[in-house]
Amino acid sequence: MSSSFHWFLPTSGDGREVFGALQSSGVLGTASAHRAPDLEYLTLVAKTAEKLGFESVLTPTGTWCLDAWVTTAALIQETSRLKFLVAFRPGLITPTLAAQQAATFAELSGGRLALNIVTGGDREEQERFGDHLGKEERYARTAEFLQIVRGAWSGTPYDFVGEYLDVTGATVARPPSPAPAVFFGGASEAAREVAAAHVDTYLTWTEPPEKVAALIDDVRARAARHGRTLSFGIRAHVITRDTREEAWAEARKLVDRMDRNVIALARERLLQSESEGQRRQLALNADLANLEVYPGLWAGYGLVRPGAGTAFVGSHAEVADLIGQYRALGVDHFILSGQPHIEEAYWFAEGVAPLVRAAEARAPQVI
View 1 (cartoon, one colour):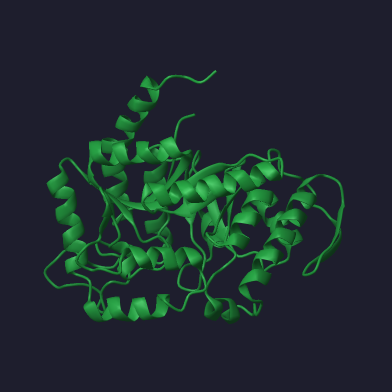
View 2 (cartoon, rainbow, N blue to C red):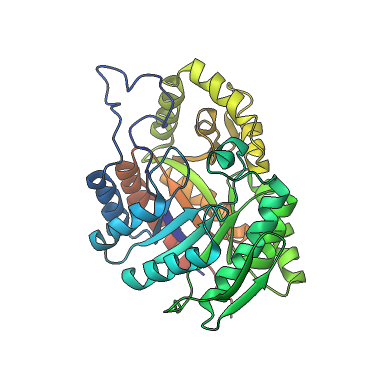
């Protein structure tokens, strides 16, 4: 099976700095201006991803970015093949409404939809949206939510009575066929169990291969106990250039231009997260002087950015080799980003992707 490469839609804004790294809008005299996430710019990113052959674009969810449903719906007619991996939080709308929204999007886009379920690990943000459940309860509700969504897509009115959700006759007028793929991430015990029982692809933020292998092995074993098999994906940034020296010079430039006060404030804020995955990302960048946590894996993004904090860094051949290492663990989906998102997409698609495809073509076929 060949790798699936996905890109990222920067609905919080874009630029040549790690987003949020500077207290000001940029450094005068340098190419570092903030790129606002207006429809014209996001259209350019989406069209670039489509032109370069990426399968989909992940569209994030949260207070500080544009709404993922509205944004991606606006981009349907601007693209023809690109899929949209829409992130949303299951506790903020009813599952039947979510099933209807997804079915409508799938129909209007010609099936170009996948879902990224985000249970949420930031209590402050959850409460901002009126969600006051604790972490374990949120995951239990997510499991119920996914059962109802799939039931509503089944074509037969679906009844469900759970601890958190209760519906009678959940259905949609035109069930999507095939149903949109469901992606989901989370490193906690509760998250792994939800993934094993209910989703199609388990996602993890990128860590050194042995740590990713442990997560994959655990979720795969849990899924087997449910009589299920999953695919696996990782979320990472990428800095790739013709030479190793050029790539690492770019990484050093990014971290050198980060405001140290912003780094301190971001770390203080992120340490309050309930997310196990966030804690694991923070552990990778605790030593500012040693951010290469595995050959070619750089933890600099996580100094100021919540969520995915690591990047593949190196020459095109080195990044392709690193992708091969994760492929060997069972990772099929690579959800990538790089700043700026248009320029870095070209570096990856022209430099790395052909090497990965060539290696896959040479690999023995399993029959």
